[in-house]
Amino acid sequence: MEKLKTKKKPGKPSNLRSSSLNLLLNVSIFLLVLLIIYMSYSIYVKLSHKPGDNIELSNGQNAADIVQVEVLNGCGIGGVADRFTDQLRAKGADVVKIGNYISNDIGETLVIDRIGNIANAYKVARMLGVKNENVIQQMNKDYFLDVSVIIGRDYFNLTPFK
Image (cartoon, rainbow, N blue to C red):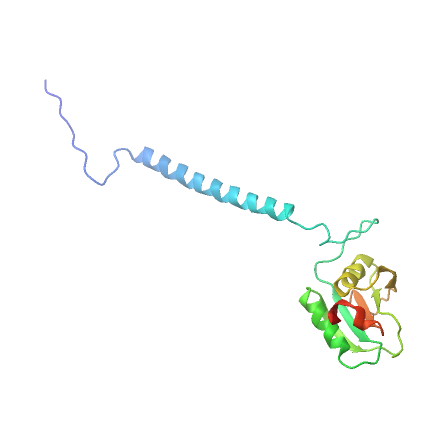
């Protein structure tokens, strides 16, 4: 007996089940490659993080990513608060208030923690070049901000004026 040969029609898969399996495997490979790329990027970001970027204190407090700051001019020289505000905003701080302090004879610039997380105040002090000795804590429930900066007569020695 003669065997009948069936001719394959061009353009149609010979086995629908195997083509579905191939498609599923290709999609799975694509998703795994995307996952590997994402995980590699995450590892890169973690390893390239500079140790000084996030201040952590010995008591476990971390500085917030965005710190809300008020800038008060305590030296009596016009335009100084605007210059400090520009510097802080360029470094990622959220300056919510600019104004004059009640006195115009402040000797050294002060950075004041208002909410109890002094790491935020140290972060702002580092942005401005203020000495750590001039970072203090005065908590007040009436304030809706993290840090106050009172600009003193030493303003010309700080980062915004260098």
